[in-house]
Length: 391
Image 1 (cartoon, rainbow, N blue to C red):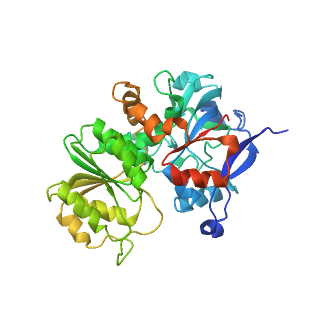
Image 2 (cartoon, rainbow, N blue to C red):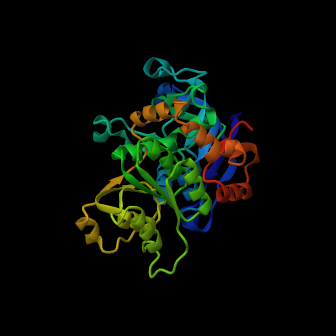
Image 3 (cartoon, helix red, strand yellow):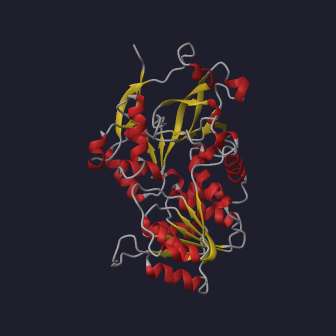
């Protein structure tokens, strides 16, 4: 008999995608290594998942607002009906393919996290060292099966061996999204810069921590959620702005009160760097309005659909540079993240755990207790959630 495990899945048909929401706990087959019938298994591992993080993209998929085409196109290609979701994890290698240790130095018993973007290694971008924009990549939990499961099979090349004496296991499960913030804050030079962070969800909050760590002179945190702005201030933001509901001619229009406040804080110049971490059309336009002439905009948030940029020529005339961030630089970003998190003197790891994760009191969910009701309640209350997969 085939052994089964518990996993969270989405199995919504494309024509029903926008009429449903949530994940569904299912019994699925235990992943196995079968080198005789699958050549890739010689360089793959089976990982027992210890902790798994709920990302902003997972929230988007919960509400069926993100990655619609990628999700359904991949299922159609694989001739499958459901997808195991989730892509942030830390776990223990329980079985390794025959070439894994010799090629990657990974072995059974190792504690590992890993990058969620499975790159091809063959395309022009991969060969040039730009794996983060691999033209034939898959993303765990979206276009291939993910980690909201008791066990998962992963290519060994994607693993990053971790040390729980340096970084606590729950924080190791956040290497992937923390790496998004690292990638965003190292794309431009923020030393001495004024930085506005639009969207104080999990990666926006990580960005607040890193902007201070990397030497920003002023960090302004902006969100529609007052509690998230308060948390950003606790993490080191110099200023916080809560966007209040306002009458707009169009939903994509920028928020005038917030922009006026930013202009006051920057003596009428605008910020040097705006970071769009929420994914809403209005948030993108907020960034463009808030940024000074010659400034830079980091675009990270993702939502499906078309976006409108009014008075497009204004962006050109201001000489704004746009940077689109996807994933992490494998593994340069991971090395920077590890060094930042392992430094006990900078307080970054402690603030991630004690402030963002409330010391585990609330944001950590026992996987065995998963329900739609619990998830809805927790997502409304906390910017970051983690499953304890062993409870």
